[in-house]
Length: 362
Ligand code: V47
Image 1 (tube, helix red, strand yellow):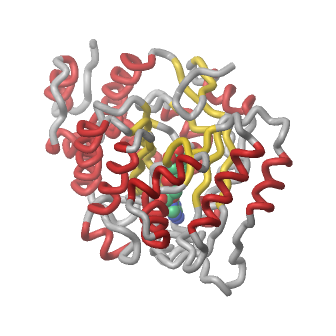
Image 2 (tube, rainbow, N blue to C red):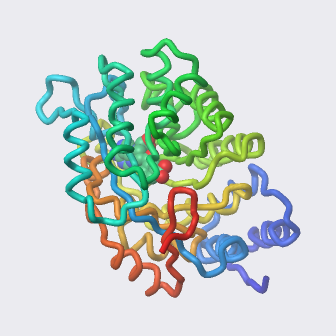
Image 3 (cartoon, rainbow, N blue to C red):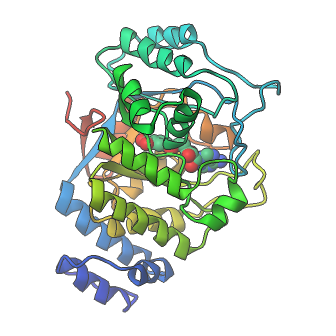
C-alpha cells in the first residue's frame, strides 16, 4: 500500500499490516496517541477494502425496547426507570403484536429487541415476546437480549445458561446483540455499573451463546471515564474470545451521550475520537468481519464519513430508537431505506441490503 503519514510512528504499524502481523497492545496505544487521523483512517480503509471492497451493508430492521424498568441503574444510562417512576413502561406481548402489525407491509428483516432488567417479570414473559414476534413475522430474524438479560433469565428461571439459551432459541431467538459489556474493566464496572454483571460473567455468557450455535455482536461504550489503555484492553479481550469461538459477527463502537444521565458533566465525544475509535477497532479486531458505524450515536453525517475509516455497515432503519435518544441523541429516530442508500452511495460506496447474518437480500 502506498501511503505517507504525517506521523512517523504509523510506518511500523503499516509494515505489520502489510505483513499480516497482528497488532499488539502498544500498537493500539500508538494509534490512539496519533494526531494523524487521516493516516490512521487510511490504514483502516486498507483493511476494510481488502475484506469488503466497496460494499457497505445495511439492514431493514425495527428496534423494540420492551421495558425501561431496570434494577441495574447504570450511571451512563438515561433510559432506565424505577417501577413506579414517571415514564416507566413495560410492553405486553399484545403491545408488541400491535407494533409489528403497524409495520406489517414493510420488508423488515430483523427485530432488535432489548430492555431493562425488570425486578419481577417471569421468564415466560420474555418467551412470550419472542413467540409473539415469531408468530407475526416468521420471516424475520429476532436479534434479542444482551448477555446481561440472558444472565438474568438464567437466574430467574433456575436453568443453566445452556438450557436458558436453548429455551430462547426454541421460542424464536436467532441472534444476540452486543450490548452490556460497556468497557471490560473492573475499575469502570465498579464506578459506572456496579449492579450489572461484570466482564467475567459477560464473557462466560457470550461463550455459552456461541457454544449453543448462536452468533452475537460485540460493542464498546466509549467517551466517558475510560482511558485509551482500557479501550485497547477491551478490544484485545474481544479478539481473544473471537479466536476461541469465532461467534462474533460485528463490532459496534458506541459513542457515549451524557444528557439526562448521572454523568451529564461529560462532553459529547469529538468527531476525531469517533472516527479514530472506528478505525482502531477495524485494525485491532483483525478477526471480526464487520465494523458498524451506528448512525444513531454518531449522527448520520459522521456515520457516512466512518465508511472511509474502516466501517462497512451502517446498521439499519431502526424505526424507533429509544436508548440513545433518552440521553440526548440529535440523530433521527429512524431512517428509510432510501436515506441509508443515499448515505452509502453519496460517499462512493455500494449499498448491500443484508439480513442479520450478512446474507445479501434484495
Ligand atoms: O449496552 C446506554 C449503550 C447499549 C447510553 O448488537 C448508551 O447490533 C450511549 O448494544 N449513550 C445498547 N450509549 C445498544 C447496543 C446496540 C446498538 C445497536 C446495535 C447493536 C447490535 C447493539 O447502549 C448499552 C450501552 O452500552 N448505552 N446508555 C448512552 N447514554
